[in-house]
Length: 219
Image (cartoon, rainbow, N blue to C red; front, side, top):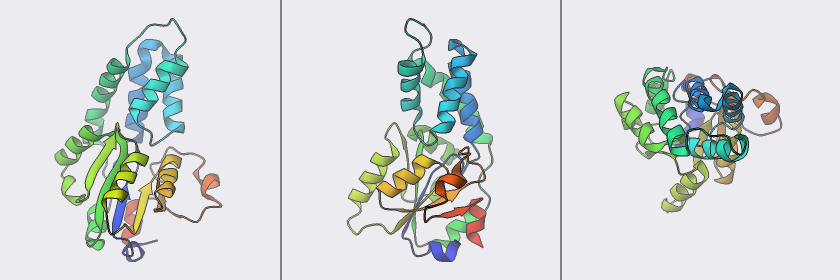
């Protein structure tokens, strides 16, 4: 797939981590560090769960950690305290990590389409980072994130567009694909920064495009 083929769409929906920003490893490390007061074994369990469930919000992951992973009677940080610790770890990394090569060129080549960010990252945090890094103006459709889920965000966006979207979702996780399918969007899997190790086997029998990085779409 390239930018010419993308021009058949009037809306492009982007995941952030692993697609626009090289931030997956930043967030995996932040989950581990935030959970360390519960011990290294539980912290690693949370980090592994995060990697296996890319694209799902931190709110859900930390809630599952406290409910299903931490043994009864073990004390440690509350949900709110974990969220604060995680956000502190993540903030600087998001401001410093690489931005996808070719993003500006792709915007120029799909100038007639609306661009959206639909991420599992915290919405307020995303908007602050995108503004600080000069990316906000690219996404005229809006920048959306948790605590609202991707399914809910896409549902509301589809409902609010009376004329209907001819859209494609560009993501790097299994959940991105499932959310796109549920919203009746085409899907492009971006593999280069993904932590989804089994993506080749998972997508082998699915009719989707796979690219290593966004700059491939500008050719």
